[in-house]
Image (cartoon, rainbow, N blue to C red; front, side):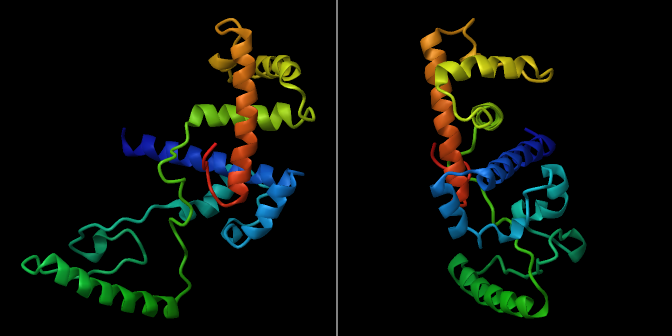
Length: 217
């Protein structure tokens, strides 16, 4: 997978996180609202997301999701981060001794940097470790949970299914997920899948209100 494809996938992950967080602010679930109050400081850097589209928000907040890396550079011209420093490391010294010295240097430099300018936190918001979301599934869960299930006051699953089918029939660029297609699956299995997805939608929303995406669902 090339860097461009990887970047697009990562951005889509964060878009889903953003949309679920936005949904949290519309939720009437007590646990979600309680979690939001507790995680307020965690999400402070996101700003007010209630009336903004993701692409507009991303232009000014993408740095929050950048993943800083340590790498070898030979000059300042090769440095990408405004918060990086050049350090000479002798390769003929033991790793243990080098790490000890690096720790002292970095501690000193970080304290000095924080006094000179306000640091923009990057890489603070990362996906749940070991829980890389399945984009296609979570996107479908979000769309159905938000646009059909909640907008129709959480109908019973048998009543929800025809609403979901109608929803996808009205979308030119979207197709009904295979697991919800009664032409390809037994009706009982489809209903179980749909019910499971709605539970996932609520669970992911609870996770996001706690400052985690996607979390366990």
